[in-house]
Length: 313
Image (cartoon, rainbow, N blue to C red; front, side, top):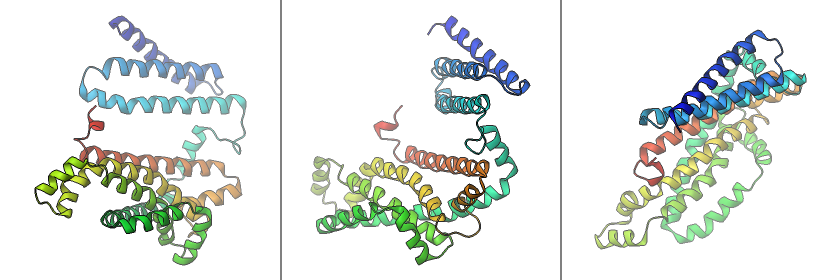
């Protein structure tokens, strides 16, 4: 892209953002055209960031990968806000993002209590326990073909069980506190992680395994020095899939039994009261928590598998 085009994109994008946000503050009910123009300004600005900043310096290229989803996320929120306001959609059907943000700002203590109960006490412990159990079982399956033929079908059977039917049973077994939520999460994350670890342990090349055998390496030496490093991309794929399933499992479990706090409890209660603003606030917090957990696993993956071709970009 030429320098002139880059400057034009930057001018149009920057001017559009400034004017658009000024109109958003000044107008009580902006028109759909105003929101569409503001989204177009975001497109111009994102294109400028991608074309000029991201390709000139490596450090800005990394920032560009973060800014692109932020720009397009803001576009989605603007379109949402514009459609709700312009069409006069009732808040009980779909509240505007501004109303959800206001609800979050006024309900921070409640949201934090629910977050701690559901995510910190239920989802994360269940995720860690499920991942650890899957790793141990995967090693056992790798050591014994008999266990592979016997345990994998059972794991597949458990993974196919409907969580809405299993959750109330686990709540009855483990009580209404965090233990039952963690148990539901363990059931949900165990099989995806197990399958990926087993597949990863079989990913090392036959020639490399034969070379380790000629050096007299034992099973555990071959496992730690060859097969586990080769399996890391598979393992992290399973962990990233399980990171989103963990939040879903913890929230669903709270629908069937919970103390007087928790995201699932709050959602089910507020739906009965038609408090859709609070329901969407809980959904927004859960989405942010899931994104943060997924991002943390991805960041650890970059540190651990820096040598893998998928990380060289």
